[in-house]
Image 1 (cartoon, rainbow, N blue to C red):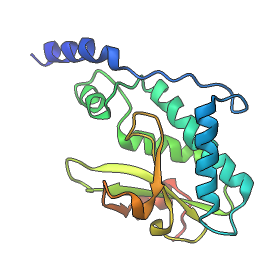
Image 2 (image 1 turned 120 degrees about the horizontal axis):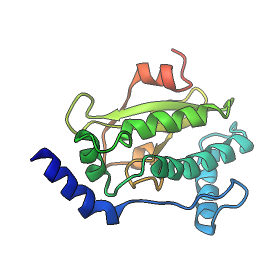
Image 3 (image 1 turned 135 degrees about the vertical axis):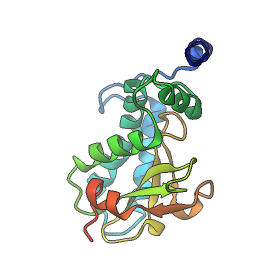
Amino acid sequence: MKYIFGIFIIIFFNACSVKYEINSTSQHNKTDTININHLKKEINNLSKNIDKNEALKVASVAILYSKHLANEYELVTPPLYHNSLIQMGFKKRGLCFHFAEDLIKELKKQELKTLDLHWVVHAKTQYWEHSSIVVSAKGKSIQDGIILDAWRNSGELFWSSFKDDTRYKWIEDNWRSKYNGTIRY
C-alpha cells in the first residue's frame, strides 16, 4: 500500500516539479539580478562596516545557489509534498535542513570577514521543526540579521529581516551555528 500511494504521489506531483534555469553568475536573468541587488542592499544596511563585495557575494550565492539546490534535489513543490517523498524513500534530499546545510557550506566558501552566518531553528525537536540561516553583521545577534530560507518557496530564496519574519519563531542552534556557520563562542 505504501508503494502504491508513493507511485500515485510521484505521478500526481510530477507536473509540480521545480526546474530553474541557472546561468553563470555573470549572466543571470533580470528577476535574479533585481533580487540580488535588493538583498545586497539589505545586507549592506545591517552595518556601515559591511564589505560591499561580501554583501554582493552573499546575495548572489544565496539567490542562485538556492535554485541550484532545488534542481539538484529534483524538488517537487510545495515543499511539504517533497518532504513526504523523502519520508517514503522516493527522494533523498530536499528537507529544510538539507537546504540550510548545503547553502551555509556554499556561503562559508566566500571566506566572510564582515558577516556572520547563523543556523536557526523553529520548533526544535518537534514535528514541524524548520531550519534556516541568518546572515548578520560580524559579531551581531540573529535578531539584527536577515533570514535566508531556501526551502520555504521551493528554491526561490525567501529573505526577510529577522524581526519581520513572523511565520516562524526562530531560535539560534548554537552548536550548528558554531559547527556549520561562522560563529565562535
